[in-house]
Length: 387
Image 1 (cartoon, rainbow, N blue to C red):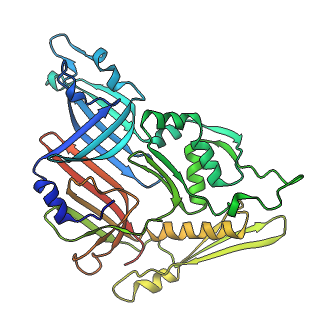
Image 2: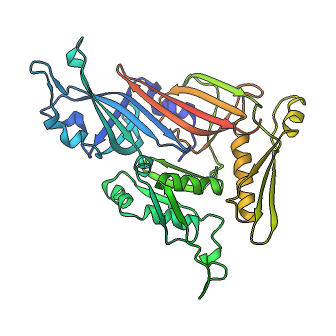
């Protein structure tokens, strides 16, 4: 994806004067069905790189027969059936970009007695994570390593069906640190212990999130592309944001509450009777002055977990906990004219906003909203670990 430049986007989108949104339900544009007069309105698309599902909601007008008093569901079945694939594009003038891919997870029929003609059908759509949250298993997988286990889950028929239906475009799973080069387990051969990974009364979603946290990985889906990879792997800056007319509002804040100078992870190797310990120090800058650093560095977080099986496990867990706690330090909420190029899972750099306010932030959430009257805005939520 090309780097975001607000000045170039202002030109590309013709000053943001003509916001546009298009939605496809089962591959059909509802506005092009000639015998109906459907109008999609009130879009909200929430994309995230955190451990939760991305969600989109919008309404269809022109679905209620006022004179007869019923919703025209018969003609709408190809559009509103649960499980129907959904694609949403947003932009301005003739330029639109895909911002969401998923499926219809919920349908609400909303009647308005004050203005029956404004009665609507409200659709709630989820990405692949919604499907992953629905099941629960207790079983032993074929895989010996967590990344292979994640691949095994995504190779199952339900997710292949999502790919075939267009809800999912691609699934990328990076090797986890427990997998040695070549994938050959130590001591493999006749009589070797069975080290296959188990699922214990958990959903596919719970298992993949557990694996991500275990190795300081992240797991998210953007535009039908599912990613399981090392956290914040893509360190290239998505955009250099400067004060501009495209920005509607922003809130930048810093808080050292809960930020520690060191994480200590401990467990015991019961088989060998040895203590396993890992330390991770916080090397961030927390103030333009010198008073905050001593307060942070004097704080230590001790984590004890019997599920940790090796020194490598302990090192990975310490890295994850320190990164998670460090990124509580800085926060950014910024609302701009609608810009579909913003996506979660990338860094942005704020320049020219003044000392401390100018910083590099990691985008966790992007919210695209489009309402009646043609108002389209994009809100980004981001966090920083240091100044």
